[in-house]
Length: 397
Image (cartoon, rainbow, N blue to C red; front, side):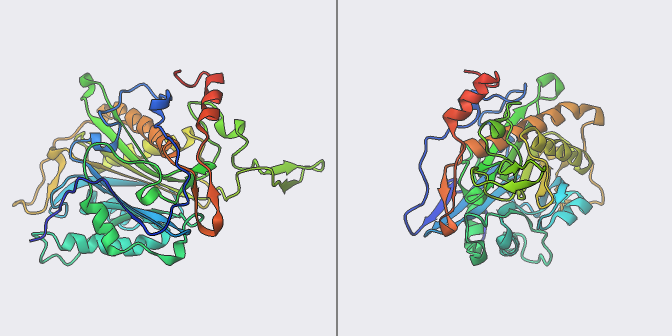
């Protein structure tokens, strides 16, 4: 008998050699006094504040060049293939290798856990998600599965061509998924990522809308790996630190530009971001797509601009029991009770705020890391950043 097993460990880490990671005392953005938006957070300020949602990680840090992993997001702990949830996808910029998204767009439902990993491991991860699902009790006769897997390219710090992610790594991430606090930074699918000029990783946040507007929760988890000019609460952090897109170019008298060696921003602005949005509001795929579009707005709020080579995707789902789509029910109709369009506005705000803070957490919780070919990606400098934020009255301290 095969069932989903929920372990008490939120992350499994494989380490075969000493880490090339500079340990730092990292804090979440809100703990540093950086409060974004006006809505309150949930208990954990995480995607798991949406009741039933679970998150698990598997981290692969080996030798001096393996810096990667898997992160799994589960809408609930039951057999998702048989008890599906409504879902939708929004593509901000399609330079990516997301798998399973077209069926979600077509049918408006999610039938597997969502897995995040690196670009060249996405295909192996999809196979593993499929194997996990068909191995569950009740799925013995299943002959078609739509595994949903997203990716970003961690190949600057990780030896991505090795494709070290295994089926067991994906199983471990799914089976270790729990509710409660979510580990962030250099973990799981965020182990080797970088964003906006600094080391990044996994980040999460949540928002609760007022009781008189439903009291629903919106939670977001991001895998940040994109470029731009870091902005925090309106303060131009990337500009002030001299570390942003195009900051390594110097203008000559004839208006030509040449590359300068004086700057830290030593990698391409192209990258990707995966945004997973969960809510307990009773909405189906049409309004979930509208919610996903609002989450994407937060990229601009933190200084990103969806460059040519950036794969920017949002997938949103609802856990509300009134909109689930169990395939074993008799009859030919679903009878859903869902919110009116006019009730979506506070949820839109919640998605924008939670996504913005999740991205900031992915940066502030990440640690400096050294990886393939001795490359080092520096974490955002906390003290200098706070001083800049104080000058711009953008921090509560």
